[in-house]
Amino acid sequence: EAEVAQSPRYKITEKSQAVAFWCDPISGHATLYWYRQILGQGPELLVQFQDESVVDDSQLPKDRFSAERLKGVDSTLKIQPAELGDSAMYLCASNTPGRNNEQFFGPGTRLTVL
Amino acid sequence: ELKVEQNPLFLSMQEGKNYTIYCNYSTTSDRLYWYRQDPGKSLESLFVLLSNGAVKQEGRLMASLDTKARLSTLHITAAVHDLSATYFCAVDMDSGYALNFGKGTSLLVTP
Image 1 (tube, chains in turn cyan, red):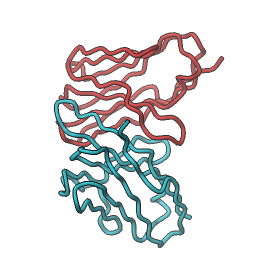
Image 2 (tube, rainbow over the protein chains, first blue to last red; image 1 turned 90 degrees about the vertical axis):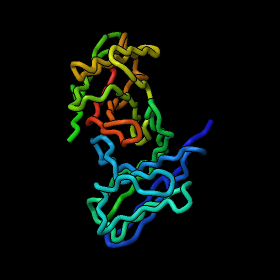
Image 3 (cartoon, rainbow over the protein chains, first blue to last red; image 1 turned 45 degrees about the vertical axis):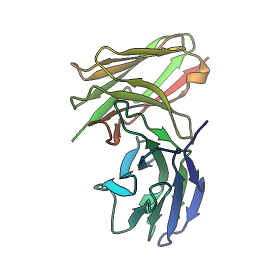
């Protein structure tokens, strides 16, 4: 069964360090989303790609976060420098938009910033 | 701004009992999604509701959508411990847009 892959699953870092997360969407899915989920809250969109283009990054803290999807397949989300408030679960999701906009989520990366 | 509100946020119920989780949203969207999340895990899609009056059932869970009232319900019948999890509803502005999630309902089913 096709799944969204993410790595690493867990990351512990110290504040001011750089971290990077990787996502490989389900094969053939043109749209890729990065969400951040703070403990006890619902996921919130950070950035959305359609193929290799950014569709929505209005909620991405661009002073420290960057995201790319160079070949329109896998994607990397980077934080530099990490801050204590960045501790959260980072979820990647993908789909092929249509009438049904159901999104399929990867296992997530749990980030802890010390 | 699209708002999605769930209630209750916390629910403790006994095995065998019935209960309903409510999801209200502020947009005119006619699509709504329910997801389940186990502690420390990712989100698992439960139901996709794509029209007014849509009803879907899977096991002890049944979801419905009333687009005129901007309300979806997730009904739990004869709860069992395995249903303990956090349930999220989500709405999109249109196809191809990101999902806007509620805060989730944390469900605990006790003996």
